[in-house]
Image (cartoon, rainbow, N blue to C red; front, side, top):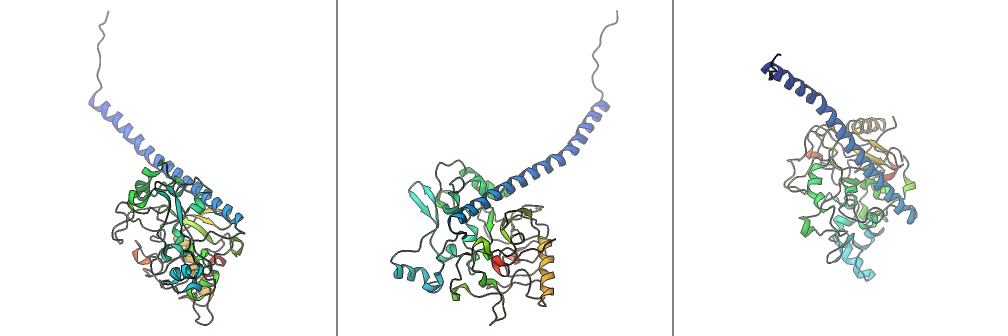
Length: 358
C-alpha cells in the first residue's frame, strides 16, 4: 500500500493563479466602474424628473406660472439697493422671504436680499435660480431642504458635505449648524425665470439685454406655455461638471462652499455633458460641444457672429464667443478653452433655445 503524501503548490503554480486573478480583476473593474457610473447617472436623471414634476405641479396651482422669489413689479419700488426698503414703506410689510423650512427655533428663511430674491443678480452672480430647495417647491417632494433628491450621486464634494444631514428630523438645518448654506447639485435656468424681454434684442440699443430694473415687469416670471422651443430650451441642469469628469475641485475659486471645495461648473470643460431637463419634460445629456457648435451656427446665420448666438454676451457679465473667453457665467474659471453661458443667459429667455434640433 502506497503512503499518501501532501503536495504543496509550486511557486510557478502560485504565480499562475495570482496572474489569473489579476487578469480577472483587470477585466472586471472597468465593467464594475462603468455599471456604477451608469447607476449614478440614472439616479441623477430620476432626481431631475422628480424636481421637474414638482415645478409643474406648482405651476398647475398658480395658473401656469413658474416659481419666483420676488414681486413681479419689484423694479417699481426703486433700484437694486433701495427696492426692499421702499417696498416695506409703501406696502406696510416686508417683502416675503424665501422660506427654507421648519427646524429647531421655528421657521427659517434665507437672508432677505436682492441677491437671493431675483432670478439672477448680476453683481453677485447668484440668484433664486440656485435655490431649488425652497419650501415652496420642497413641499411637493419630501418637504426637506437637505434631501437626496437635490443632490447628484456623482457630485462627490457636495455629497460629502451634506449627506450627514439627510436623516436630520427637521425640515431645515440652520447654516450655523451646517457651516453655511449647501446648495443643490441642480439649478434652474435664470434666463427662463426673467421676463423674456430682459434677454431679447433691444431695438434702441441693438443689444440682447435690457436691464430688468428699468423694465416694467422685468422680474415677472413667465408661464411654462411661453416656451417657444420647449424641447430645446433647458429648464434645469446639473450645476457642476459631473459627467465625463476628470477633476473635482476648481483651484480658480478661493475657498469653497463644500468643506473647502468649489467644484468645476457645467460649462468649465469641453468634456462636460450635464444631465438636462428641458421645458417639455424630457431629460437628455446636454453637452458643451453641441452648445458651442449650435451657438456659433446661429450667430453666423443671424449675421452677427460676435454677438448673435443662442446665448447673449450683452449682460453686465459680458463675455465672448472666443476660445478661452472670459466674462459670462464664470467662464474665466474654466479648465480648458470652452466658452459658453448657455442655460444661464439664453437669448430671448424662455422663448429662446439652448440647442438646435438634430
